[in-house]
Amino acid sequence: MNKKRFKFVCLLASICVCLVSGCHFGEEQTEPPQEEMTDTREDLAATDTPADTTEQDSQKETTVGAPVEDTQGSIVPNVHTEQESESQKTTAVSKPEPVADRDSKPFWQSENTVQLNNLKSVATAAQNAYQDLGSKLSWISKNGKLYAYTAGQNITTDTLVNNGYLESGLAASDYEILLVDGRDVAAYSGAEVPAESMELCIFAVTRQSDGSCLLATAAGRAGQISYVDYTRLLGQYNQNHGTMGRLSSASAEYSRILNFVGLYEGKLEDYFVREIRKDNKYALVTFSDRKNTSNVKQHILRNDNNFWEVVYTNLQNVYYPVYNVNRALPDFNLELLTDYNLASWKNYIVRRDSSLVNAMISKRLITDESQITYQCGTDHYFYLVLESGARYVAYKIDGVWQITHVNSDYEAKNFISARTGQDYGFIILDD
Image 1 (tube, rainbow, N blue to C red):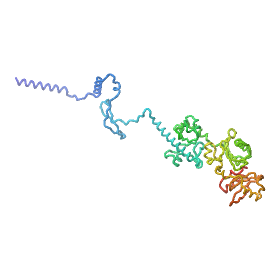
Image 2: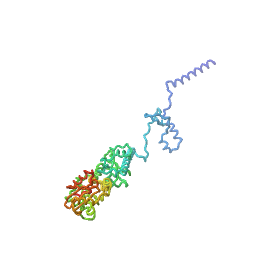
Image 3: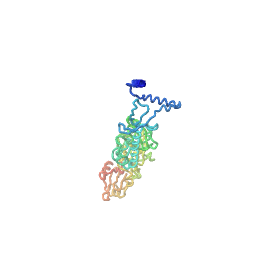
Image 4: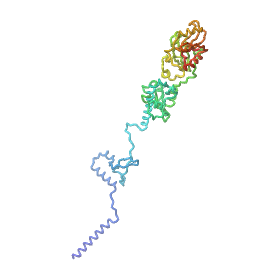
């Protein structure tokens, strides 16, 4: 009986084992999907938190893993979120682009800032060089651009580098350097000329991609004007005012100009004129009164609607006429200036020489000094005109006056120039 019961129990146990094994045959052991786990966790979290969780729900919790190397070889954080793809694979995040603050400038403005700083550096260097070297080297405004008159060339960034006023690296072709009046620039649309630059000063200019011109002075940005306005600005400083020449004493214009000189001098009288040089806008008059031929003066006049007005006086006292006249009259054609500088000669000019008068008498060219209508000269050269109209050049050899007859003031100038290589026109009376 006991054996039968034991066999029954074993059979029953075997059947149970088979039944259990058959229920799981062919099934794979799987984990619940990650999304379901996440949802479950979020559902559980929702039950444990207050109802007002808007901010928390809008943010994803992040975790930072070990740094990884991006495709450029830079080390970046290994960042991933809990709400990733089903595979839950960790992926490298690309290096982020820099994000500008709300108040920071966009990239293009930063480029413009660099360009403007370079422009200001050129303007500052040129302004300093002009102040230091301008008068000595005759730097002027020629048709609006900064120009070395003696050297005969425009001033560029290379010039400034060579003179130690600017670091190398800025191409000369990218910049133009002007010497113009800030008030003229300010008249154009787009100009923003600093108050300190409302006078004749240096402007640096560079062309923009749209063709306009960005300007700056040593004081800062001076605005941006169209290229059409830029060419108009330079046109205001055009120095070509028609044919230049020496005016004939027989012309009516010669007398008219002298009348305007007389109005300025406050005395309408005849003058001993050395020469009048003019174009269609300006005239330079070199003259003296009749009482003192050694008091030689120079005035510049400007023609405004056929009315001559003295606009630059007493040039005979200026040691750097090219520089100073240009600052006062930037559109004046400096070719009208005489080759001689009266300021350098004025202390050597005398109205008579008694030993020369005696030499004239001894040579029987005159019998009395009163027969000399005009005489003016230096210690070594003199020019004389007699009542008869005869003209003479006197010069010294070994301290003795030699006297030569000439037919005209041109011949007299050429005679002295051949001997000295200099222009003595300031002592020679105009024919």
